[in-house]
Structures are given as structure tokens and as C-alpha cells.
Image (cartoon, rainbow, N blue to C red; front, side, top):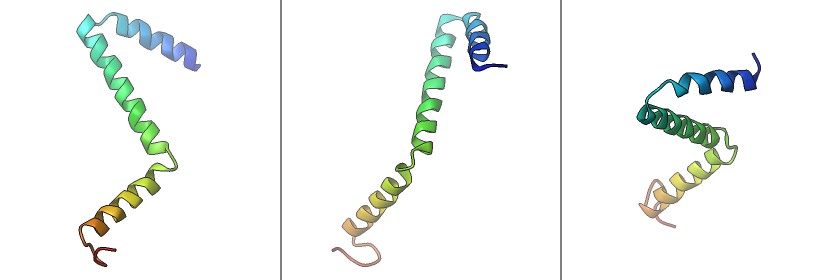
Length: 66
């Protein structure tokens, strides 16, 4: 099944839902897309590590404040 067929099928299935549930499903898909973007971003792990290290230094962590 091609992507476009998959999207069309999901769109038709979603149209059967009440309005509030369609909005909730849309919001859930968007949050999942955002999580995938953050997870798959090659720079995010380095940024998190740098943030942890910076916070550790501010708190006087293992090596004390610098």
C-alpha cells in the first residue's frame, strides 16, 4: 500500500468520528510527529548532554563551579 492510499484510508476513517474526537486524533498525530522530529534530530542528544553538563556546573556538580 502506498503512502497516499494509507493517508486517504486514514482520512476516511477519521471522518466518521465526532468532531471533538477528530480534533483529538489530529492533536495526537501532531504531538507524535513532534516527538519523532526531536528524537530523530541528530543534534538533540548533544544539546541535551550540553544542557545537563551546564546545569551540573551551575549546581557545583562533580567538579565544582567553573
